[in-house]
Image 1 (cartoon, helix red, strand yellow):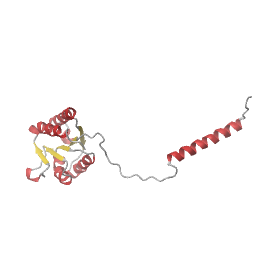
Image 2: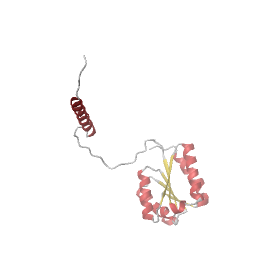
Image 3: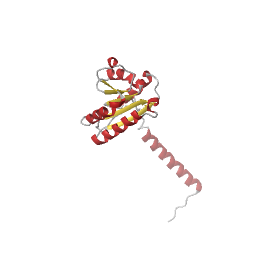
Length: 176
């Protein structure tokens, strides 16, 4: 037996089917009318590995052998010893601008923050004081030894690579 459908019947069936699919989709999408409350987004490190972060301003990073050497050493040490590493180059001209970028690295769970350049070096003591659990190394900054806090290590360019490599290696045994 063969069913006979007219165009009008077929169109009505398609419209009804589309309405049912749309209603089901809407109900699933809106979670059956329940209201959702989303809080602010937060970074989570699900790797369980320690993280070392390099932060520098775009002026200090441009053509800088120091930044390139430090980044290379951090990547190598991280790969050998199971630590996450990341680099951020920001157009920060003042300590205030750099401070907001450093605060972002703290939120991203950086255990060690290495800064290069005056703006980030000047912002280092404030972030180190606010979050004493984070180690901070300021390289080639304009900081005087007296102005640095207890958990800010000041280094010059010539000995920075070796000392930073040691610190990244030391992170490998820690987990969050």
